Length: 357
Image (cartoon, rainbow, N blue to C red):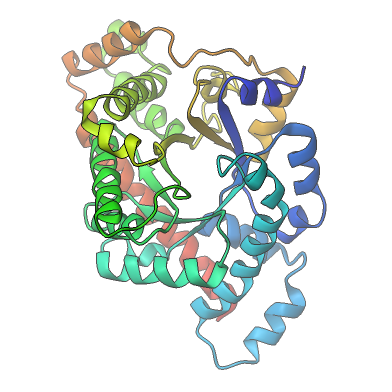
C-alpha cells in the first residue's frame, strides 16, 4: 500500500512544501486524490523559485509591473490567487474531514519578524484577502511575534507558527495558543472551526548540532543524526501531556482543537542519512509532516510507514541528556537556528521583491 496513505491511516497528515501555478494546473489534484495529500505550505523561498521560473506568471507579472504598486503589493497580487486556488482544490477534503485536512499556508512578510504589531496587521489583511476557511497565515515564533499569534487566534484566524527549533520555542508557542483560545472564548467567539499548527524544523537542527559533535570524541559521534528526532519526540510527548491534562480541560470542554505539531525542514541534508529519516521516525497521531517534492516522492517509493513517534521516548530523553553533558546547549542552538532562519527568509524575500520591482 502507498506509504503516504498508510501514514494518514496512522493519524498523520502529509502536506507538500511547495506551491506554484504549475502545481495548481494538475499535479495538486492528483496528489490529493492518489496520495491523500492534506495541505500545502509556502514561504518566500518557494515563491521566489516559482515566480522566477516564469511558468504561469509572465502575463500577470507584466500587467502588475505596469501599475503603480510596490514590489510587495505585486507579490501579494500573485500569491493570494495561488493560495485561493489551492484552498479551493482542497475544499472537498476540508469539508469531508470536518476541518482536519485541506490547509494552505501563506507567510506574512519576513521583514516583520521582530514587529509584533506589523505581523498582526499583515495576518489580518492576508486572512481577509484570501477569504477561505482553510487558509492558514504563517507567523514566526519570535518573541516579538508570539503576541501577534495570540491575538490572531483570538480573532479567529488559522495560524501556522513557523521557525521553531527546540523545546523552549514549543513551550512558548503552546502558551501563546492557549492564551489566544481563552481570549476568544472569553469574548464570546467560537473555537469550533479554529485550527493551528506549529512547525518544528528538524534537518537544520542535525546539520548544526552534528558540526558541534564532531569535536566531542566517540560520545559525540554516537549522537550524530539522532538529535532532531529526539527533540521532536520529546516535544510531542510534552505537547500531548499538556493538552490532554488538567491544564487545558476548559478548552477541550469548549470545543477547542489541539494545535498540531508539524514537522518541517524534513528533507535530509546529510547524504549519509536515509532520505526519509524525518518521516519514517516521526509518524503518529495528531501531527503533520510537510515534505518537499523529493522527500514526498522518496517516501512514496520506499518509506516505512509505521507508528514510530511514540517509540523510544526514554532514548530520546537520554540523547538530549547526553548532549547536555557534552556541553551542547540546545536553547542556544535553537536561538541561533531561528536567527539564521530569519536571515535566510529575508534574503529569499529580497530576491523575490527584486523580481517584482
